Image 1: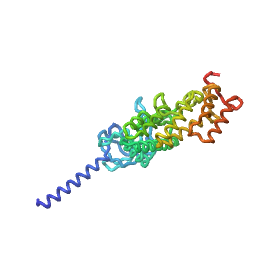
Image 2: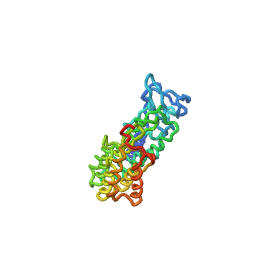
Image 3: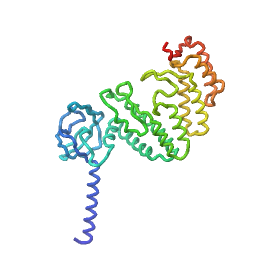
Image 4: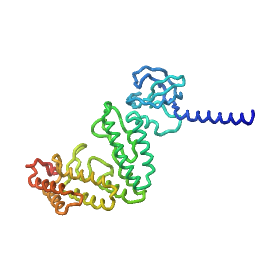
Length: 347
C-alpha cells in the first residue's frame, strides 16, 4: 500500500468509526423478556415481532401520546411508548420500561416521559433550564433561574392538568426529577400532582453567589413557610383547616409584620420587586376577600387593622388604605356583613 493510499484508508477508517460511534448513541437494548414490537403505541395493537432480552433496537426519537399502565404478577407498572426499528428493519412501538439506552444515560426514561406529556420543545426548555440551575454563580443568575423555573413549573402543570387521561390510575412520582429545587406533592384530587419550591435549596443556592439580594428574597420565602420551608397553599398568615381549606390568621400581627418587611426589603433588595408585589397582593386579598374566614376573634382583628392604619407601610397605596378602613368598620359587627370570625373557638 502506498503512503497516499495508507492515508486514505486511515481517514476512511476514522470516518466509518466515527459514524459507528454516533450510531450507537441511539441504540436501545431490550432488558425484559417477552418484549414485543407493536404496530401502534397501545398494548392491544398488533404484535409485529417478538424481542429477546439483549436485542438491540434503533431509537427513532418519537414517543406515544400517553403512558400505559400494566400489571405483571402482583406488580403494577407504568411506561411511555417509544418508536423503534429492529435489526430486521421492522418499525413499531415498544414500552420504554422494557428498554435501556446502550450508553449510560440516567435521564433517558425521564426524557421519554417528558416528551410524552409535554413534547420535545418544552422538554428542551427544561433541559436548558436545568443546566443553568446547576451553574448559578451570581444573584442575577439566581433571579433569572428562579423566575424561569416558576414559569416553567406553572406551564408544565397547566398542560398536565388539562390532559384528558390524567387520573388516579397513573402515578407521578417521577415528576420530582423534572425541576431541581422543586418537590413533588400529590394533591387531594386524583391525578392533580404539583411541584412546590423547596426554599432551603434556593436559599443554599443564594448563599453560594455574590450579592445579597437573592439571599434576602430566599430568606423571606423561608419566613413565609417556617414549618418545613416548602412552598404550599398555606403560608404563615393562615391556619390550615384541612387539605383544601384555611382560615386567615389576621389578628396575630403577621400581616403587618410581613408588609413592613416588604417595605424594608424594597429598599435593601429591590431586585425582588415583582415578588414583593405578589406577596403584598396575597396578604391584601386574605384581608379583603369576602370569602375569607378568620381564626382569631374580631377584637384582635380590629386591633391589628387599627395599628396597621395608624402607621401604614409604604407599600400600601391610598386606595389600599381606604379599603382597609372600610374593612375595619365591618369587623365592628362581623355577623352583619357575613364575616365568620373566631373559628378557633369551635363555635
